[in-house]
Length: 500
Ligand code: SF4
Image (cartoon, rainbow, N blue to C red):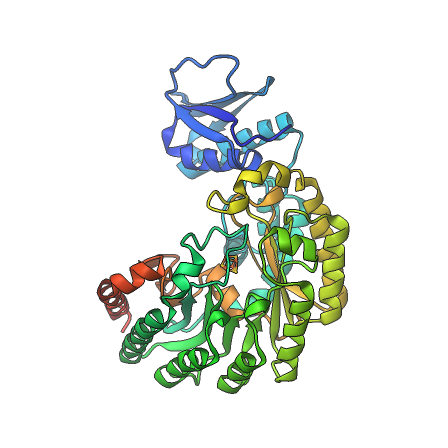
């Protein structure tokens, strides 16, 4: 079925509480169609694409779910009866989603491999089910209740097994520190993150760093008072290596001198764009934290694709940056790749995989392109979606190749609007798993975050609840409203008082 960004589906739903999940299931099949909910009694013209969902609560303890759909003149309907006393609202919602999924699957002749699972963190769910009911139960639930394919069930099982040792009873006072450097030398075509003009905002760096220093020192003071235990540090962005060597050194020194680093197991910095990496900067990183984990991100080794996505570097620049990092003694390097980039194809993607395996970083993160509305390539989406069928082939090739070079999958997350409705996966050689990635994805402890756009996530020990504190998104807002940021950060104290 041809996908067109301007197409529309109207949904009639008798049970409005289910609309969020129903929309998510529809987005699996039609990521960029317009979806609108109408009153259940509204008349819908036969020419309009529609789905009609009725949940009928009968007196005799039965619930009848009926779903009918007409999409591009393809029609289908299904009905299921369930017993009221055996079903919670969540169970009924899941049954409705499954029926909608089955109908759309038949109409579009596709079988999305994650079934009705639309959340960002499938491994967290898999793990929670396993802890309570065992691995076999989780596998069975994923396959039969959520309609996840065998291939993805096995992937979830492998990842859960590989990250299990990192998930065991974290200290209730443990946390990770995230620091945001929201500046980049130019904007990548697929980026939905930096919506301000990058050239304009880069002038704000000196002022931004001064305030970031204040926020870090204030945060460190709170951490000391509360006696929290730092487990990992992640400096992300943006592109932190856009900073000058002396700025990088000052930033890392502030962290090292103000936080207790004795318990810190990992210190990562994103050096995402090879065009921002110099030997001097790499030396600063190595000298500041000898075991530093550095992420150098090629995204692809196809120079034509790099041009199309607006990265101002070549694949040779990436190789040079990697070799420079090795020369200064950095021995923990991650590299990010993206499957499904515009201009890429299966053969060129396989070359990228072969190239990265020749270089042999300690870990590889393989993303699948997610086409967000705020990105420059959203408008050209129709061309990109044609790649959908190739995505599976690409991922299969990568997933088949990595283990031969001793990389194991250790974390996974999903995003909305990913091509082929797939996933992002982290692969690492033994002992080089990026633990911050596991902590943040599986939400096992608090992440205390500083800088523009950073979100502090406070985790209640032994509970699945997270409280969030948001910093302003853009660097100019961060600068102009810094007093509010400091005030909000102070609420970390209130949260932890309960556990003192
Ligand atoms: S490097 Fe990352 S944050 Fe910066 S423009 Fe590219 S995708 Fe966006």
